[in-house]
View 1: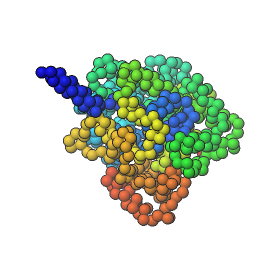
View 2: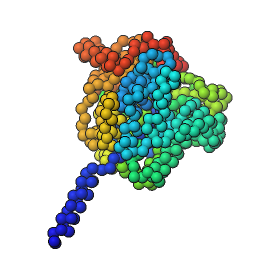
View 3: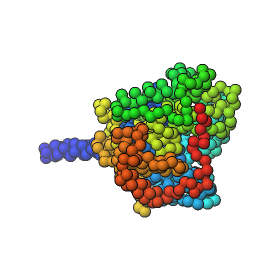
View 4: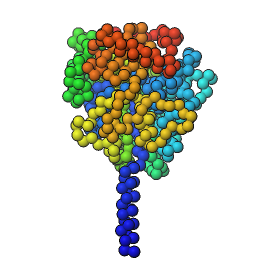
Length: 540
């Protein structure tokens, strides 16, 4: 009889130990920004004030070789489905113009998205911000692809943006808001979209804590910043203006040096030549230098405002005692944009730059700097278009306090996000669901080595690439193939295609096989191929 309490105590100890060995599934906060360059963040070589994202990096893990698809909606489709864009039906969004399934802008009915997979495992799911996965042709494709139809319990969706101070349409849990209360066309009111998205995220987190604290959550925050139009609060613009007076050439050099110091690129990496569509900063007149300085200051201000919101979100999670077991993933949907466009409410040349009455873009010179150390921009499959920062933060399971553990050089792609979350949530795909294209990065988060994927594949508007181990075969639309050894030449400065014919043959064959399997169509045969991405450049 005297042994019974001892046995009970031992059994209790073993139960506690077993429970601690199998922690509860994590909350997941997935933060996606829009058109941010690889080196914009301070923890990726940049000079923009991003202290809260820096904190996530310092306490978590940064990836140096993580990839997106090169553009907004294909990345979002891959992120949500774990499949390459063509497989997910989102190679393009203009479904009414293409008879090909991969280009019609709707996810297949069996293409299950993250919340549809997590919810049966006990999660509640929330969406805030950009969605960009709706078909433009509901007659041909009546499938409902709204966030609510794809498993999100609550959604605050930017339906039509165009103006950060006065967005056109927001759908708040099914209710259409046109020009939200407090917004102002001139940007002189209290409303600013990035702040609104941050505060809505905080509201969802608090409501979840109040009413569903027994369930883990998945929250997808898809910011529209720093996508054009360049709109920002004046105090944030003023905060960053002076540091960009030195121009894009000096900023590229400073970022390049810092990236090496941080260990994100090898010390022997070469910085590519300035983009051929721009000019030396010193060749610009003082007036033009002032103009372009303002463009980059606004871009920086937009990234800074995202960071400020993340700081408030982190504090909210901490106040709710949820930060410890929340996996935060932060990344960008593509590289910085070199586009020059005027849409939405138009551009008043007499308006204050960055105000709601202006419509400015980053354009090619500063996009080249934002994507340091890489070549090319959004829409291209060279590294400048497809390389993205990825930061993972999870105090309960991921706290790399030693500097040699804060950076992972494992190869990854946005198709890996869904299988990673699935493994951590201890759930699987439903029966009869199509397989995902990605693989789980959970071993990397646990500090383990992970073999390279069999391949990573890209195709967008005729720009194409495939990577196997350290070899990458890449071509811009209408241009010949190029071959790079990314271990020796991550910045794609030395084309070695003539020296390795067998490797070229192997990679060409694999690309052709995957293109056929995924439903890729020769771009020149499609009606939207008449214009090239570079047609949107304003040459300088």
